[in-house]
Image (tube, rainbow, N blue to C red):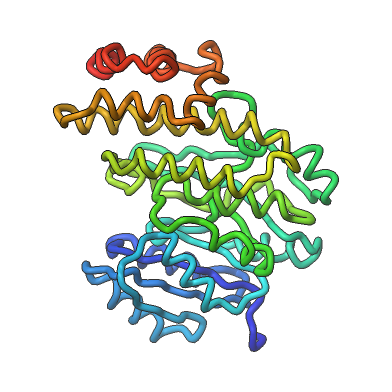
Length: 337
């Protein structure tokens, strides 16, 4: 292996001891070997820290860093600061990867010179596995092809709601110099939707990209995951998420993103409003809080734009109507039925 590896794999670790060995074993089983692994222990309290140290002691490619808990993005950013690879990849510590993932992705990067390489991923639940595929054709895209074929459906493919390009950081390789310009603009406190704040600005800035047809990444989806923790703070995160997109994506340069972003905002609200307002039933000022969120400018614009006929499911259609007009009583009725 060269002094500086071709690839740096960053693995944020926080209280995932039951899954960590499977994750790390899948990385060490890669048929591609010119990589380093940076384990970022984000203040684990369940024994994950010791397991990180144990793995670091068995393979010289693994480096372990321990820090106070700061959240997932904080750990990723810390990993980047210590990475030395030409390309950067991320693996979440409760997921795992196919043995050929980095051989195929790094070969595509090296042969094409692409700034980014993407593959598909498989969502794994206790009951089934579901392959998630981007709508982009497999192959190489130069800058003009990205502008013509990828950007118009990158965040919203046209069906409510399906991404054109997955927002996940974990099924992609990034040229280090590209990612460095965008990763640190992502607010650390956002826990739902934060990946896209790095992925989409990187794609909009990339000179080229390569899309592989295979599904190499296995995402463990469970009801107890961080994504499903809903409270009033999630509403503040939504606002910060939408405001950050507004700052990071210049619509005068990329006008095709405006409608896509509004569709995404509506989707994000439909994803978060019902569980949040169900969880805080009985708290004071809940009607006022609902109306404030409905009339927050990005949310208001989004729900004026989205067509109810495009939204699947009767409950979701009803929620669109309620959010568009700030109808908390009717919203609460549909929450209960």
